[in-house]
Image 1 (cartoon, rainbow, N blue to C red):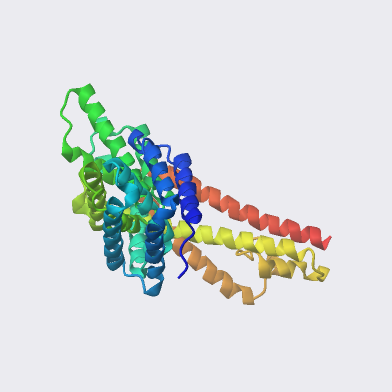
Image 2: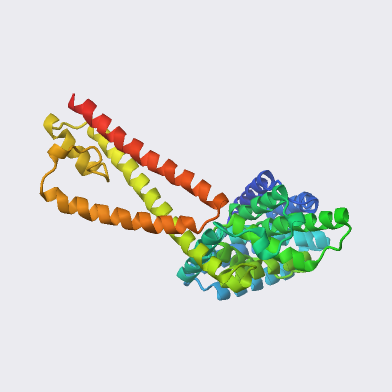
Length: 408
């Protein structure tokens, strides 16, 4: 096995770290101060005497390609490797005068490099992880349609919209990074925003900041944000963040997000300050809304694809008198929208009757679902349905106009 070129290892680490500085606007001052020790680590790794360390790192990464992913086993192997590398650095001639800060910074750089190289192998590594991620995201998307802060007993004085939106934004950054440390920083920054809200309100209102106020707000922020792959992110951090660093504040906030996620997974009417019947009706209405939205989205995508096909067909020879037939075959999902009564045949009656029954059935279900919503929830939904309906009609008219021009 050929050794990893020293300059290659150094350049990869250096490039990766520079990207981190540009993107992590919310990094703490302590993180920024680690630049000098980190550069010292790169210089030490560039030294010919560190060849044995570089070989160990490359061999460890390559070894993962020899067997199938097993998250827990992979996590143990990575943690053991971190410990062995830390011990090797402390005993290495190049690190004999290194401070604890130097060693810690070097290990942060090593963790980041290792986990970026192994990311595709270790993040959401099993079908079960993907399934759990999907189920959590789907449930949150339902809750988003009706859940209010008061359902989680969050008092009005804590409902500071700008701060809660900032917390959501920080949590959503979790998928912008591949290193466990940076993913964890996204969680920490989100939780710090929430904690600051509680502290500021406590000071201004002269009331104590209770620990019981924090978790409901984190649950609400998590539902509003609905970060993709939430389960996989938490699992990735737990398995591959150095265990020595998942302590104190980091451990507290991380554990709270794990608890918030578990609460959401198990959430039912009894978990909320909400009537059970109202909860069930809201969930059913949300499922229907999502179904209608997904079907509308699929229809729009299909219509767009069909429009593209029609545009491409302009460059191909076709029979002028077949233009109308092409539009009906390639384009509209509503073939009778522009039809005239004199153009209908007896054979069209069965199709029209079937479509009519289907339309009435869907319309009735939709009306019942919408009637369960409050006015503030109903009006945005009706505007969205109206907008999507208009978009579908415009798309249909565009097809007819295109066909007419082609025929002329």
